[in-house]
Length: 250
Image (cartoon, rainbow, N blue to C red; front, side, top):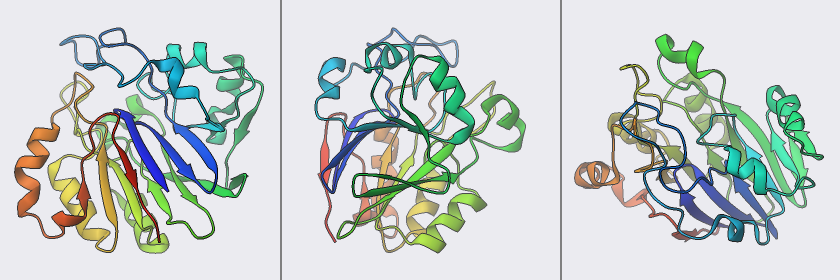
């Protein structure tokens, strides 16, 4: 398995001969929305032209419809025939965007030799959930490959803990920029929650993404790298740069 961080939550996963593009946010620097009023996101450029990201992509996974996970640029440049895999609640909205092959993942779907199913999470504390709406993560696996749990836009919660304990995935991707909405949060994992995820998944490699790209973030890569070496299990923590690829095997 090879995981390449593109930017923020966007990444590619190559597994068992299939390449997946997850949550494409393809706007150029400063040409998306502001989530705090401090300035337009994304705060950084893509590491390569957006069109080049589509080379070799077999399907796109969309966790939810927030603009930093499936933006107007992605909707414009993705081929209409590209398979879009999503939670069932988002299927009709994505069809309405003009895509021809939109598949609800439900309890599980196969893409080539790769199995994919959705997981649940909470996009912040109770007081923001009405604004944030429902989100999902993904469990991705294949024969002779490690299992990937891409937790998505979620804080540490019972849903995340249950997946970790029940599935014991070898690779865990968490979103770690903290972030606030109207002064409330975190919307995704902050430093204590990343440490908790590392402790809970004490057998796994934990990758932290969704960093240094949105204007409402409260945690940076620099913040994480400053404190993480003191954590038990920090040798299992990976904080990739935009464009960086990571390889994993059983």
